[in-house]
Each structure stands twice: as C-alpha cells, then as structure tokens.
Image (cartoon, rainbow, N blue to C red; front, side, top):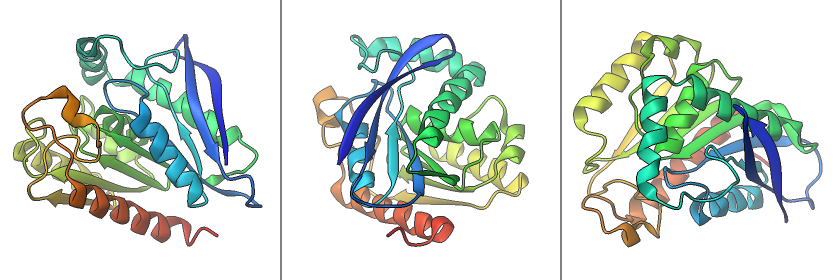
Length: 241
C-alpha cells in the first residue's frame, strides 16, 4: 500500500492531502475523492482512504482548510463553513483542485471518478457535483444537504447517495425534504438512506470525544451505509478487481 502526502494549491491556499493506492494491482482503476469533516483532515478520512485503496480504488483524502492539519480550535470551522454555505464558489474551487490531483495519478481512470464526504465533507462532495464535476457517483455521509444554489443541481452528472441519521440534530426532516425536492426537480438519479437510532457523525468512532448531544458513533448504520456506498460503486463502475 502506498500512502503519500501530496501538496497542492487551491483557492490560493497551500493544501496537503493524502493519497492511498495499492501498487500491487495493475491497470487503471476508479478514483475516489474523500472529503473530511468540519474539524479538518483527521484520522477518520485518512482511514477511509486506506480502506478504499485496499478494495482496489485510488483514494485521495483532500484538505479544504490548508496545510493538511486539523483545526486547532473547532469553533473556527463555522467561520469557514458559514461563508461557504452562503456562497459555495470557494469550496467548489477547493474540491475541484483536489479532484485534479486525484485524476493526475497514473493509476486513476479519469472517466471513473467519485466523491464522498462526511458532515461538511459530504456537503463539499455535493457542491462539487452541483458545480458540474465529472463524477459518476457522489456519496454524503451525515452530510449537510442545504445549498445556496439549489438550481445548480441541474449540473449533477452522476448518481447521488446520502446517508442520514434519523436523529441527527443538524439535518432535520425539513432539510431532507427540501433536498429530495431539489434532486427530483433537477432530474438527478438520487437515493437517500435514513437510519433509525443514528445521530450526527454516526460513521466516526472518535466522535464521542466531542461530548455533544446528538453526536455519536452508530456501528450498524456505519456498516450499512458503507455497504450502500459500495453497492452504488458497483453500479456505476462495475466490479473493481
């Protein structure tokens, strides 16, 4: 397994993402962009990238804050996220630059690309798709579903999956309904899985450290949503050898 930090520039900022690829496999293979949670590029997205590489994908865990490090103060996240929710141009640019890094890898098939993300990383993947990126699949795990530009859903080229906890305090039922309407009106091939008993960040085993109400790891939903993602990848990419 090759694990490599890659420096790149996006939106005028020095970024450092992590590439994971199994070099024992030959030939071009699908590439998956992994977008981190609001706290920054931590162990969770890095481990997801490694896991995907072990299944035969080329995975790049992107950075959208800078220097490839978690935020020193988690409260800083809302400053960034609030600005990007008001105007998604910046986060689309940052995600687009990371996608170009993934496409540039010699093992990546540039015609078979996906973006996945967690929490605001899921929002990032969705905004990348709304911006018209050439993605076959987009997956958001406990991702914010709202956008300042719902009309841009018409630009989505791939199939969309969102995995949401029914008890998520950040993504209420009204937001899910608005997203359903947005996707349907745009003619997107979309699906949403809602998991009973799951709250926010249900895929992250370390989330309990924040000690925030409604934020908790939920093992069964983590496993089920991972399988749902792989099913979608099989659908759009075929089996990866």
